Image 1 (cartoon, rainbow, N blue to C red):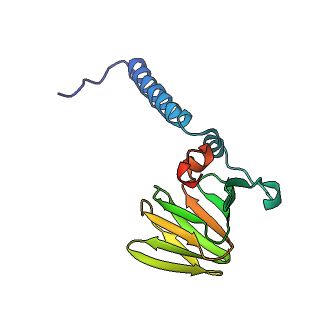
Image 2 (image 1 turned 30 degrees about the vertical axis):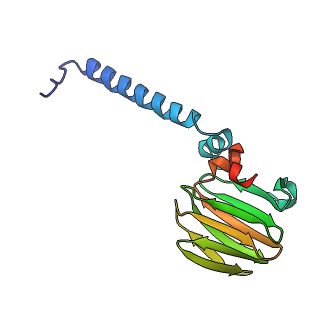
Image 3 (image 1 turned 180 degrees about the horizontal axis):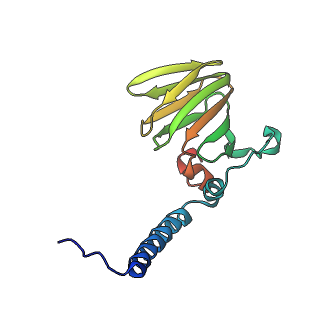
Length: 160
């Protein structure tokens, strides 16, 4: 059953405005559910120049440290792993690129063992379970899209 169009243009405009307000309230409520840093990044894109030395390293355990920068839709993390550090099997909805700057990581992913050495990159699709072990002291850069909400909120207990 089709709704009749109002003959009065003012009534039609009023219904459209009400619908727009409801949509705007829903979008705002969805954004508020996100963590503050993500919300700030989505509000306004801005150019930032950030030296790694100015970003505090978070010590997750004696063998693992990280620091990261969050953009509007992407996160770059610098991860520091001591030899023998194991990142337990996990998965996340984020696409991941891992670039090894120094050292080597052995990954268990998709039923395979893959060693990624300095100067090499590994791509990990969203929701793909994976695990890693540092074969030597290692520095890697991980790129995530979208940014890792669990890292920003500190709810990544599998690393702590």
